[in-house]
Image (cartoon, rainbow, N blue to C red; front, side):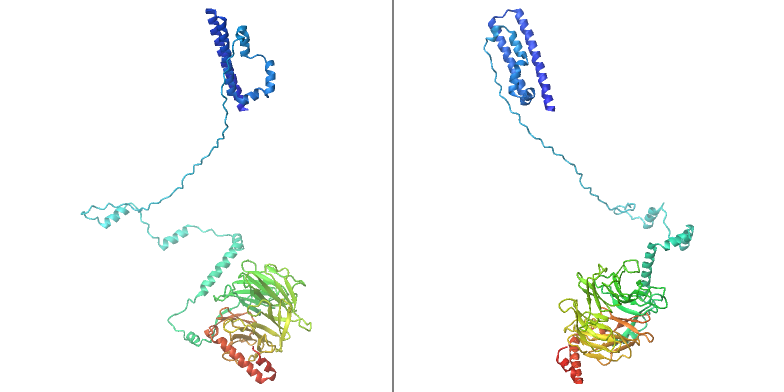
Length: 624
């Protein structure tokens, strides 16, 4: 619409110019006609020239207006041609009709003007943005002291005292405050005393509780880390003798807590694999404190001789077994007497379990004495067995229901009352369990032979523990395992034979636990009901232990566990006390020939048994 209006304005302006020129031309012609009477021929030529100039003006206007002007003025050529007569004569025609008839007979002059084609072009605009350059900040290092005017060469240098006096003149030098001035300054600021409500609010807040608990642990560790009263001028003759002997044990730590562990029997011990100094201990109920929770789990730090546990957990049922999760250092698992499995998180401020299994027929309904984590970092499961012979496989992410369940029954369709569980080194499918009837069973979790397989008979009392050989070396002894029983014996077994290879019978009371050393192939430890811990080395002697230590003369020792490096053993008694012993290098630094010596020892044992009992001749002929 703007283009069309502009063309209309131009057209009107040209019409006005054309009318003005015609009017001026008429005035000139009238003046000439009045002055002289022109001839008819001359008048015709003038009329022809006037019509020619009018046509030129019209062609010029059409050229300027273009096709758009013509299309706007006349919709179509036919309609324009038809409507031109009716529109009335143009000024040129009117003028020509006013001329005499002689002028019409004059020859017409046609002026042809070449038409120009308009070309449309597109102009692309470019917007420019001015980005200021990055500002570079520079620093100039200057000496922040007043400059000193040094004298010219040959002049005498000023005295240092004068220079210092000049620089320090007019400035006050801050003198150090004395203790009395500091005390006066502190007394000048009055300290506002908190009200009882404010104190109770601060002490009861969670932030203060976390801060106080963390700070108290740090202070205890700092105080217990070193012996501040040690005198390096004195010679430790006893320590030298122990180190020289290499086969001695020394009591390093003793942990007991008045409220949570006193008068509670220790039911299980386990070392953390991620943090080797942490030891978890599970406790039975305390009959003298019925208001306290029945089950307690304490995490002790063997690095510091503190009488306060690192973490305290509890639940409403007695905890019969406990273990650290092998691949997560923050989780602690416990099997309860009620059949539930509880999970605690040391990152949580709660002492109660963050997860627990349900009490239903899908899970356990009898006491859970056995917990074990098998698998790898990316694929592992929790295996639990209760005394009714039910084995469950759990995922730690979901304890609402087991992933797999299995009833452990022998061929006689009798359920196995499981009291202990062990997986051989590197195994996730095959396992061994000890039962209340004194028998040991082997089985597998999956496959065509899933369930109980072989039976090992030899004990005359309930089996209290079972331990698989875990010290890897030149010879593979992963088929060996130990069992302890109420029949006062510890027996050595091989998965290839259904009869015991050897029986260690030096104890005078119930043997509650026995465990192989994780680093020495021929060393194991056992504890009994009279408070003894016995260390055995089969390469040295198989008749008597190489070391027997009286841990507690009053209470029985229920559990024993080796640390991962074999340098410490933890023992727990029936009164809730944990003892940590440092063992000599003879037990945790085996020589390279220990594996071959143990092989020879086993061959000698089999040969001796075969000569003593003819029934064992077939056992001796087969490899262990």
